[in-house]
Length: 329
Ligand code: SAM
Image (cartoon, rainbow, N blue to C red):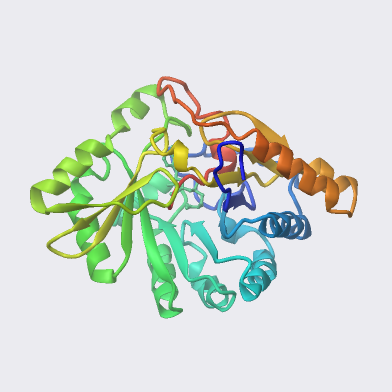
């Protein structure tokens, strides 16, 4: 519980800074990744996440970088599944680019994962290669088929990019409808390696996207909240649920139930602020969990009431590309 009586029940954990894609709005093509010693080991991730679960976290979302490129990551999912079995953890899930899903979908399902968020900005193979630089669309579509065959529910996360996928709005909606996937649009944030001109050019406000959607569908506002920066509507004509994530809007801070852990063990208490707590030090200092739990308590006590974000800043709290995980509701 934080000082504003919000129960912190949702932990998003980045398990790696590496990725097999290089989405232009997210990463530079030639990234320098962290030395291995900086990263939490799988055992350390287990210890840390288990401490959070013990202290009240009920929902764990695994992200990255690309979580499924971390070697041995299934060991971590298996370890977390024990908390599902005891009932302490209610949901174990991940956000992925889908490239490795074909290999892992069955095992994820066996570990108790029920839903996955898959990031996909376009259904056009050429555009896909362009925006992800290293990604290939057929591989992701294979992954999606595997996910469905394994019984996983899929939510597609699409970053709204002006002049890039604007003309695919209805195609994406129709495709998700046909495939049975939920769909959420994310407003692009100013990060990654785009020139400033491109960056501004690519900003496609979700208010505008939504208005476009309303030209073809009747949107029924849903009151449901995930505690995160997402709003949902239902399309009356098809029954589909569509989400809108405007991560930098601070309108839901009062119901914010989440914190984020980087792959180096830094805990960020708010998406829009720099304040963080080093949990790796107490984790490595001793095998006892007491100091770690104390550090978690102290960190949660510093969770701010809310944030304002100045869109003209060049980076989002300087931390997004290290552990981006706002998405997916
Ligand atoms: N690799 C995984 C994936 O592709 O979903 C997890 C990490 S990825 C950084 C998480 C999400 O952040 C993806 O949906 C991605 O599109 C989104 N993202 C990355 N950079 C963004 C930006 N500048 N603005 C908005 N969303 C962004």
